[in-house]
Amino acid sequence: MKIIIPLLPVFAALGIILVALILFSGCYTLNQGFTMLSYLNRAVPLDDLLIAAQESSSEESVDSENVSEYEKNLMFVERIRDIRRFAMEELGLKESANYTKYVELDRSYLAAVVSASAKDAFIRYEWWFPVVGKVPYKGFFMPDDARKEADKLKKKDLDVWIRSVDAFSTLGWFQDPLYSFMREYTAAQLADLIIHELLHATVFLKGQVQFNEELAEFVGSEGARLYIEKTYGIESQEYRQMQNVEADSSAYITFIQDLIERLNSVYKSDISREEKLLQKEAIIKASQEQFIAEYESRFLSDNYRGFSRLPINNAYLELFRLYYDGKAYYKELYEKYGSNLPLFISAAKTLKNKGDPKRQLEDALNSKAFSELQY
Image 1 (cartoon, rainbow, N blue to C red):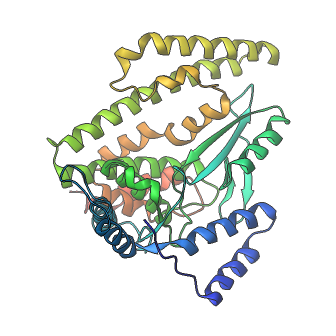
Image 2: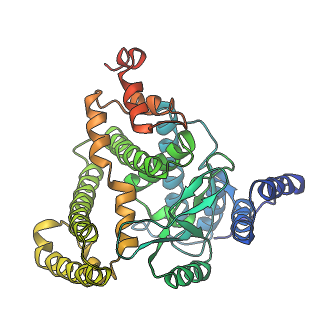
Image 3: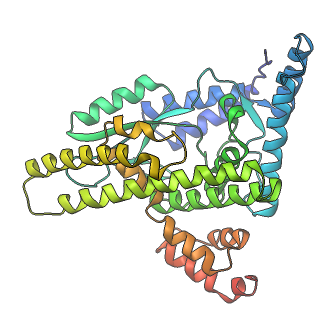
């Protein structure tokens, strides 16, 4: 399938680059910025994706048992538009043109992200950037660049982890596009991804990366559940599949959190660093053996069997501390105020950069204005 790539108007492109040069500095930001600009420059409206697929399908012979490229794209586009409508009109996320364009990529992920941590403690390595402040990860569009960054961090005697990500929010600076690999996602995966990223574009507190990620993780997950429930019903295959995926995910997170607790008790002890590292290695090895032995009783699918072969380290485990440490807190707070996600998001929109964001969120939900809307 061939898609005609429109060019950004020259002055618009120059304007974006000038803004980037003013706001950011350093080769890293410029390199990543120019790559992002090239992706945005290649983005086509979703209608163009349908036109290109329709032309391609008309040239191919498709038997009745297979779905044509046009039908696949039509289903994808309609689903995206419905999720966007649900997120903005029914959940109250910020109106924007995000996810109205499409970029063709030749890989199954968007970027490689590097994280690091101390080897003998859960202390995240952080990078500082304008606008967003300190963050415990650094993304690269080119995997080789991510590996070079990882090598530098390993020389500092840090645990390092590289992961792939399928999307990120530019926080309203640009129109975030969809990517070709997303066509293979289920409705629940698309809803979770889009609602998660739109939450970042709606609520983002500088220097509060833990809160930002925990909140987006909760809202994305719960928003996707509500979308699937409304669109397909609780008796549908889509809903049951989503529940099974969530059950496995929760079981895995619980297992990882238990491993983190065991390691943390060692890290906080008075033994030497060398002994901490020896006990760390033994605990991780034992946990992986336990994981294999208990797999059938814990999980419904084979999706997590690879854990036993992963080179687990603190940088990997820190990702779960970043995204999931507050999961129970948000769920309890959400249920306390009527399990009303639009209300929950409205309260989050009132948050300021100063002060404890969790306390602010509770105060907002407890205020008279929100309590009157609760039921």
